[in-house]
Image 1 (cartoon, rainbow, N blue to C red):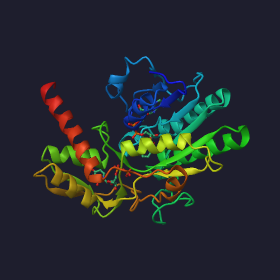
Image 2 (image 1 turned 60 degrees about the vertical axis):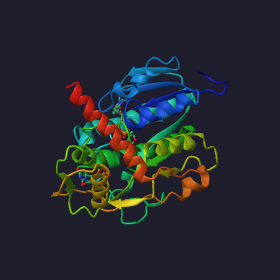
Image 3 (image 1 turned 45 degrees about the vertical axis):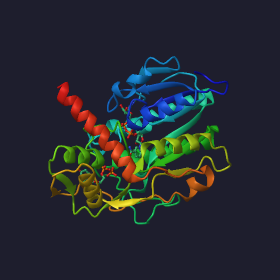
Image 4 (image 1 turned 180 degrees about the horizontal axis):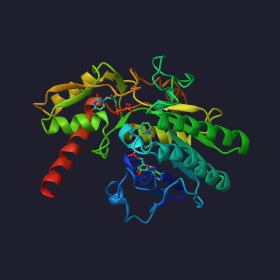
Length: 323
Ligand code: NAD
Ligand code: UDP
């Protein structure tokens, strides 16, 4: 149902993991949502229950190609997010982040729409400041295997900032930290999906390096709430980057033990080489988000992991029934 204050909102990457949760949340708020996705890592399954809704439209389109539609707001999420996927075709990843973001900014300029960019904690690279606040400028390799993503996202932030300065486009920059939850892709090679599937199948858990490296995991509902809060924020500093993440930091070894425990798994831990440029520590300082958006994550990692494990368990069962 559309409400009197409902907006027409474009979500690029809307058939992906975070995007599909965001589309649902915006539809629940009564908005009209146009989901644009090239289905590289996203799927129709993720948006299956939305396709019949009157206030939802799906458009299969690659944002590297220009798009002309009239909308009030744009959430630009289109971009593969896991190392396995963004390294599959690194040149395309840069194109998506630079040319794709440019196309969305042109759309925002013509339509006078507000645009939010899904940036990332990867703009901090392998950080030598801990925890990372928004003023930290990062430690990023320009020519490594992660550069197509890290530098692509950094360039996207610059493009947004320059469109704001030069064309007065109303921008928002969300630096999203590791997010997990139902509808993560099973084949994305990320630590949460790998460990859940390995534990559920009683297969060896693959720790890269010694497992002492840390990440801070935010449940997808919290991330989505943060993105919407930032889009709606209209303070004087609304155009500055904001970290959206959960400050609960843990090592990959701790994560493996938690998941083995929850799955009551017989899996054993095995170690494998650490990928090049893998960040050693990552944890968001969310002081800014707390103070300007009154936002902070609500979901405990134990609760979020349980829901995520249930999701993967259901996926495995479905595959067993329908090979
Ligand atoms: P995802 O891979 O599930 O979703 C990305 C979506 O974008 C997919 O549906 C994919 O098909 C689509 N896409 C990719 N290239 C496209 C293109 N050129 N044109 C149109 N659609 C395209 O990833 P996600 O985890 O949902 O991430 C969403 C966004 O959030 C990404 O921009 C990512 O960089 C950012 N982000 C995610 C995380 C995380 O932990 N998941 C962390 C930081 C930032
Ligand atoms: N990782 C791991 N085993 C896996 C997959 C990943 O130990 O099977 C490690 C990876 O080396 C990194 C951390 O887990 O240190 C998070 O990896 P992910 O790809 O999920 O996210 P990102 O590195 O992009 O934060």
